[in-house]
Length: 267
Image (cartoon, rainbow, N blue to C red; front, side, top):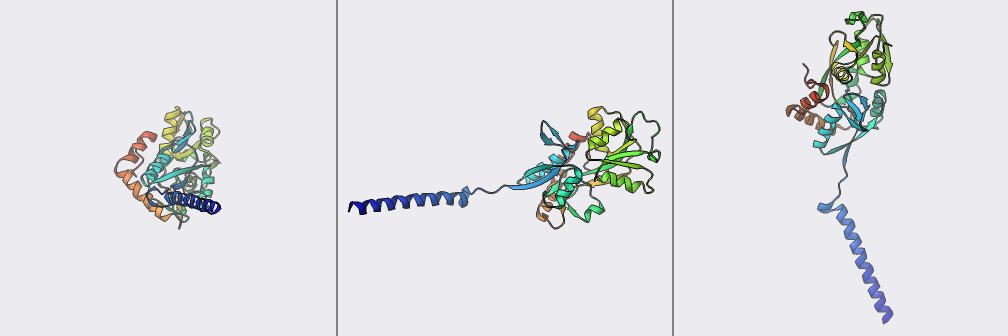
């Protein structure tokens, strides 16, 4: 009888423990205490493209970075950042390693063949700077026979190639903006091509000895790209959120903060 009683008690204890364990597991997966998986956007940025995306005390910041992070947070997403050079980011986007890029990606007809874009969040005029001591270059026409630096894979370089239909301007490409700009500062090249707002921000920040060569030769919209047929729901949600950020003045405020002028509108 003692053995039977002991077995009955043991069976009861095991049953209670099993019930408790089952209840704990159920609490995690069911009901109001369910732990939901965080929604994540995997985004790329160079981290060296001031003021679009750059690092300050090892923290990634910048105009494009903040636009995406604010829009994502409003939609309940967390942004996981991947840093690489610009051409590397495009490669990672096309292979699905990241979902989008927040680094002044211009909307072009060529890129529309590969990507679907969210609504534009800024507009940039593409222009060229030269060293302020260079008296030989005062207009775009003066660049014939000269060398201009730019970032490898950037639309700035492609715009310059399209403008220079006869191939009269030598174009030297670099992995980063810093490399391209430093060679212009040190007179190793005759000019440097980039967006006017980014150039203004760089010149003002570092009191750089650079001057503009004429007016921008092309204007283009900037938006978050997605590989065609992927993340359509996210792209549409971001488009709607970008419109809200335009309407409430958030993007204008970020423009002034990073560029010193409003780049959220076409004109």
